Length: 324
Ligand code: PEP
Ligand code: MG
Image 1 (cartoon, rainbow, N blue to C red):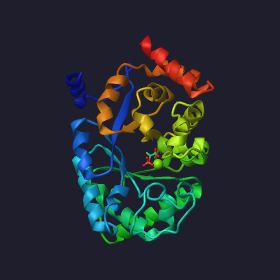
Image 2: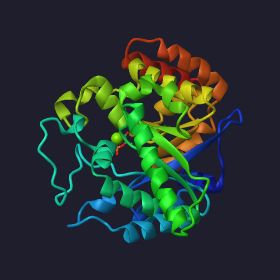
Image 3: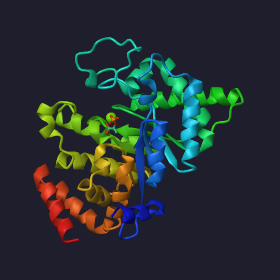
Image 4: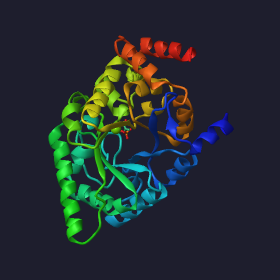
């Protein structure tokens, strides 16, 4: 099986009925790139940049970040690299960043909210990204957006930094795609409005599930509520993909669900364009999508979305797969 999978590493990701997909990998550091290349991922669908800020005693400088982003873009050799701006807070803390204690950190000043509050941090990262943009195919992605004003403010700040750099004579790519994560139910429900103002969406199911189910993703006692195939979650995902399609934009997913063999057939049927997962899942996912007809799963997904529980959906997918 390993040898058979290995053969797929240089192949494109295509469904049985000929639909081209992007099967990308998630990374947290430059060191993770070796596995991405080894497994022939179609790109990097999520670079969690907060890891560059963790395990040290001060912020990484613009120069340091620039070198890292440039290196990743170069190594990916023209394949798409989605770099997410700082997603700190919640479960991820920085000892050198003094933040007020919050009683609900997952509902607090985290990720983009923190970046809009601490613009020095945000601007430094954006400048590093913009400077690196000429080294490859860069997509910039903002995490944890709930309302349009946050997206507009983030884009405005990025535009300001771009203009400053150009005035200084520093080249910046003019084909950077700017997107946002959909990980808050309010953003999923308002995806039509957001779709007009971004180039792409990437659904962060780890947080989307936690916020939809009101169940802390770190708390074992409520782990039973962590239900990726629950129709409520699937319907939100469906809304996001349809909104993107209507606006002519593409949709990815970078939460754990994107690499899950039970979820993949449904997501393919619902029209997800890009799946970003741990590098080790890319080849098994490529093999799986090669066996699935998107047309057929579009009809199955519609049936699944009308169900009432995760158990029914799971059983349904397993039954359909058995006859494939
Ligand atoms: C997510 O929330 O699904 C996600 C990809 O981001 P993180 O796991 O880093 O919060
Ligand atoms: Mg998240």
